[in-house]
Amino acid sequence: MKTVPSWAECSKSLIAVAMGKEPADTVIRNGRWVNVYSGEIIPNTDIAIKYGRFAYVGPDASHTEGVDTKIIEANDRYLVPGLCDAHMHVESGMVTVTEFVRAVIPHGTTSMFIDPHEIGNVLGLEGVRLMHDEAMNMPTNVYVQMPSCVPSAPGLEHAGAELGVDDVVEAMQWPNIIGLGEVMNFPGVTAGDPTMLGEIAATQAVNKTVGGHYASPDLGNAFHAYAASGAADDHEGTRLDDVIARVRQGMRAMLRLGSAWYDVAPQIKAVTEHGLDPRNIILCTDDSHSGTLVNDGHMNRVVRHAIAQGLAPVTAIQMATLNTAQHFGLERELGSIAPGRLADLILTSDLPNLPIEMVLARGEVVAENGGLTQEIPPTTYPESAIDTVKLGKALAADDFAVKASDHGVSASATEALVRVIGVIENQAPTQALQRTVTIADGLLQPDSENDVCHIALVERHQGTGAVVNGFVSGFGYTVPCAMASTVAHDAHHMIVVGTDRELMAAAANRLGEVGGGVTLFTSDGEQAMVELPIAGLMSNERAEVVAEKAQGLVNAMRDCGCTLNNAYMQHSLLALVVIPELRLSDVGLIDVTTFKPTDLVVAE
Image 1 (spheres, rainbow, N blue to C red):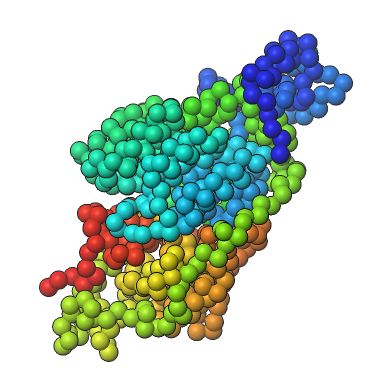
Image 2 (cartoon, one colour):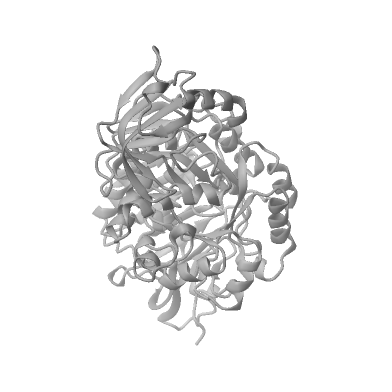
């Protein structure tokens, strides 16, 4: 992949091009410059590029043209800085870094800030290093945040690996580490946990950015304490009050529009209706499904959405470019079309709708009219990252049985009041519901008529054969079915949701056979499968293939009665014990409002 010299290495040539003493490599003529510094759109602008960096941006670059200079006619189209995703997890796309980059370049994303804590929970520091090294070989800018919370909530779950202060200290010396990934253990931070504070201190000692994750609606003392910890940003806000509180405390508020998280609309009102300064507000995706990437877009989708909520187009673009670059201390490298910066830009004929007609990365045309113009070879992962799903035994229907006697229910009882995880459409938080279920043959039964399904967590890192059972509501399944996934944020055991225990066992065993992935079974057998052999999280196939298989999964879920938007993403977060209110882990049912295990059956 093309490497770009540092500014110091090519500064003499940049100056010489601007003076007309050296020819530019590329000149873009007659565009409308979207200037994210001044907030203007400046017509009749030319751009000269040398060694992958902008050398001249002004009214006439003819003095920079030489015999071999490549000319691109903008034809009065908008010249937009390449888009930046400030917070995201590649693994959520179920593809490798390489395939993620291939999928998003045609959508205008030229910089990504990734937190590989998903693979970190399976493979530890080795997994983080694999993605770090892969990221460095991309034709676009892929910066890595060192995962801070592996596991995400010590004591409430057990992952496949653990990372601590020494690991953070080591990783901070790696060339492509930009900061510390989201500090999800906010109760640990507010309690002064030495590991959390040690990781934050190690990051600040090398002047890098600490990512935040405060997933609580409490904006009282705990929030103020978290702000005091050094967390520089937060993407877990869902309400208007959340974004206002974060900005006022000196944090960057990151507003996310992922495949299943729709948090921009309520929070952008802080700017459009309440007049907050937008400089400290950033747009991101957090989690994007492969189908979303291939079919709908990436950061261009987020920017369009923000504009549709009433945000001025230039302001929305600032939130996806310059604001991000400044936040990570990269203002002199990216986030704007200005001399000295990396020559990452988009040509588009319609700013509000943002069709991506041409993409340049590091001065090279990498995509045009929705397709790549240069190929990116696939990456092969080592055997150590494969075959990570260890079930320990063949699972049977009885493993998914919820015995009333195990939960202190009287032998004569015919029903019980149970705690149920309630899915909230288009949001990461869940509800802590209570529902009455019947007891038959000594077992607590699901209730399809009232949308109460079985949920189980199957331990898959150590091969213990352990299964933790509970109930979930929100998927709306109306036929006998079961879906299993080895993507189960953040410890990434296996999550199985279903209405039939035999089918739950079949789905779980199938993933053990293929080494990880997502599958859905009905009485007619397997209806969909996305194989994810890399750490049980990522495919080794092309993004387009994964997206097609993922669409098959969506269709199969819909055929079973599920109408949730991107229900698979909701499924994959049911074990995320750092976002309220109720989750399932290998420890048991977790009340995330108190950060303690809780009983499945509500005491009378």
